[in-house]
Image (cartoon, rainbow, N blue to C red):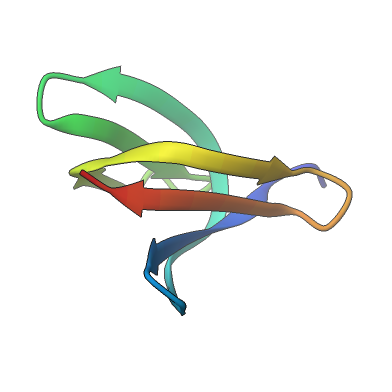
Length: 62
């Protein structure tokens, strides 16, 4: 599987906000994340880092 977990970084703190993320799409309110089960979450954030070998997407609040 190639999906990743999405984390929201706020300063030095990171919180996992969605597991098994399959798609990340631009959205008028930030980013739309969708997992492999079709669950969706809209986050006011931008991509800070993609660590694909570690299966991590780091987002930063905007």
